[in-house]
Image 1 (cartoon, rainbow, N blue to C red):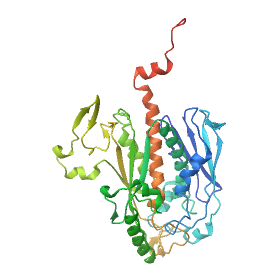
Image 2 (cartoon, rainbow, N blue to C red):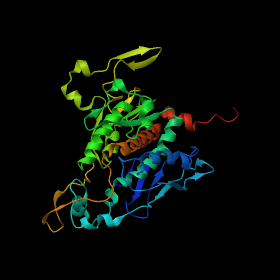
Image 3 (spheres, rainbow, N blue to C red):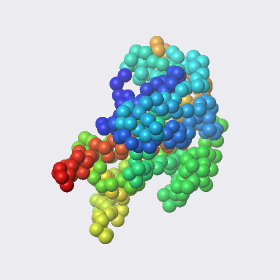
Length: 371
């Protein structure tokens, strides 16, 4: 299978299947000397692990991280960092009834069309459990970024039609409710809506917002390696994401140039913008203001209602999906979006070291002998 590696200078390769013995990631290109522990990574994994509340699958996984290589005496060595997480609570029997049918909304049919073979146990590589490797890598990237004064923060902006307006944001609430919304009152309303979905054996979609603070101007390659293009590619590679927007996003289609342009101004020798419709990126390059992106996440396709489908022989049939599934993907996907954004920024920051001769001189130029 091609396409399991992301990045140019800071690369991430995920491996493993939902019902295999383990799942994990290999990170290459992380600089030596970064302080890193299993606890640093575990904090990220705990935000996406299942079984934490009634809005996540009841699959009981500790998602305990193990660092196999690339770290010595608490610091990265510059060699590939291999991370693994053991699967502990697979129930493959839950999928026995659908092994010859294609589940609506899943990748069953397309995997069969591509490979002529598929792992029907939870979707194999197309399972949301693959994102564990992304989150583990994101924890490493975030640790690197924090040392540079850059912070990536993601949260649930909307579930169904329950959307938190920007004026009501309280970032202190994000970790204080099970839906990771930046407002507890809206989180309670969203929980009531999800209870209705559960009662109706249905699921909900939603919106994740991610902001990046402390980003310097000048990061991103201006043609095919644009910062916004890379962020969109990274976030769209998450299985449940169906759309990505930067800054004002799709609303710019209804805007005028005079309302959409961000005016510049100078203050104490620094260049800044009066507004941020562009979401912190101009011409594919960061402009020094806050980067804002949003990801539209589809409803969980595994629902308990009877659905029409076909089997592998092309015969019309119907099925009822059993097993343990999230009624909403959004809360557990928040840290996945955050992680992919962090990996993207870390990769482009390292790549950017070759953009100017002065950067190379700062690293490699030595004082003449005798001085």
